[in-house]
Amino acid sequence: MKFDYLIKWHSMAEEKLRNQARYILQQSQNRLIAEHFYDAVKSEIDKLSYTADVYRLRKKKEISILNGKYAVKFLVGVHTVYIIDFKSAKQQHYSTP
Image (cartoon, rainbow, N blue to C red; front, side):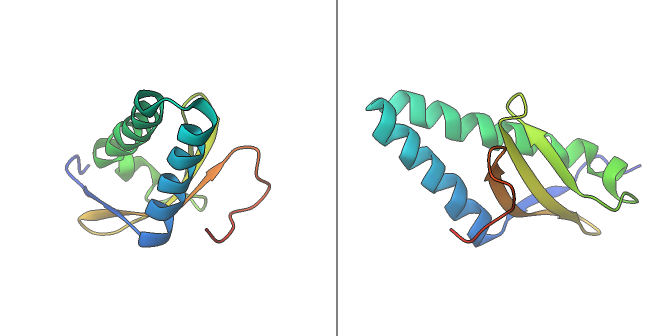
């Protein structure tokens, strides 16, 4: 089992995460809250570098993060986990940023 995958964000997924952080900043008017959200998501995704091998054979490569409030879609490569999409759990489908 492999435990040292690199994590690489697709630009669209990264942009969606930034947009969500901006929205949180706009709603809360508190930069620390927005930064904490962004850092918490990144930290949760970083854990995939150790657990991605479990998902290699599964059809659906998607995980819920932050108590199920958000979902991340990803692909597992030979040495890299590619984060290809990010969405709020309230959204029915992944959409364009």
